[in-house]
Length: 260
Image (cartoon, rainbow, N blue to C red):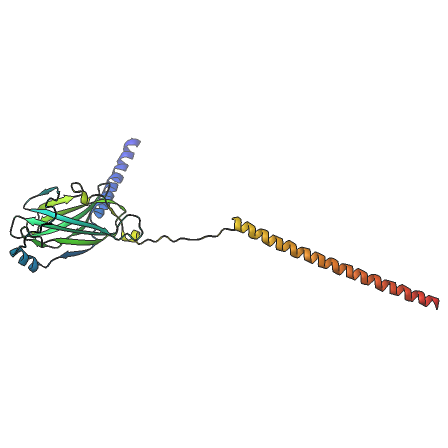
């Protein structure tokens, strides 16, 4: 009976701990960052799409590995890690720019950015504003620059999803699981990156210099002590001589007095 009652008491505690863990996980999943979006004006992109330029001979590879794609896909991506003030190999600013294409003449979309830690925890760091893809134009690129806050130091995978702005369906996705460019990103929090270790110089008196200084002071003290002893000895000898001299004078006077 005691065992059963103890078990019944543990069940509410166990359920409460599960709820706390779920709340904590939910907080971890939502981690919005200080993000700046960069892209060309919609009117400029639309005008460029109507008059597409001749393809450059030194254009980048048109194959970007991704998890899947539908009517839209990621064509190219540039990723840069910046700002490592403490020189520990971890960065606190993430810059990601991609160019996506669509089979439609135009398609409104938005992008979702997640960071996946080494233990598999997913942190949603940014959901972009709505922008428009124009066919296979290279002018409809979209970039974000993210200042990382409240982010533990780790090697992360970046996952980007392209979502249809009208239906909410995910049109394309790529991540560090299928693209090495987005894998093992060494990232950390801004506050950790700004940390400067303070070097404190503490001098100890027990070293070789301290021993030499102590010996030097001891020698000075002994020399002064010796000089004082010699000086006192000289004074004592002088006083004794004076006393002897005064005693002799007294006896002579007394003898002379007796002679009279």
